[in-house]
Image 1 (cartoon, helix red, strand yellow):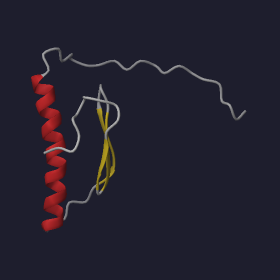
Image 2 (cartoon, one colour; image 1 turned 135 degrees about the vertical axis):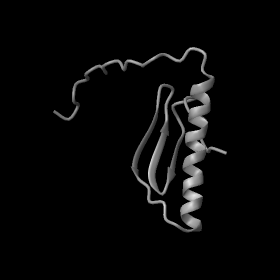
Image 3 (cartoon, one colour; image 1 turned 120 degrees about the horizontal axis):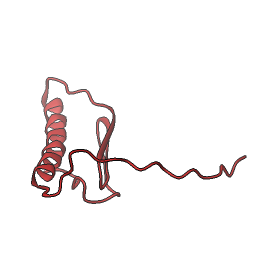
Length: 83
């Protein structure tokens, strides 16, 4: 079972090896690196990653209002308080 509920909140984050997976309402972000070795440890890491990806795919497949592509809004610029 996945340790996060993809696309459900903006607060969950997990690490698998050196790979960080952050949950968002509009995306699941992954960054870092993950080495899956040919041993029991590698299998455990691969299964963790698969669980997260399976949960994301299931959510997307079941979404009745899934758009063709989302458009990200530009962020507002703020004044640098350190200038």
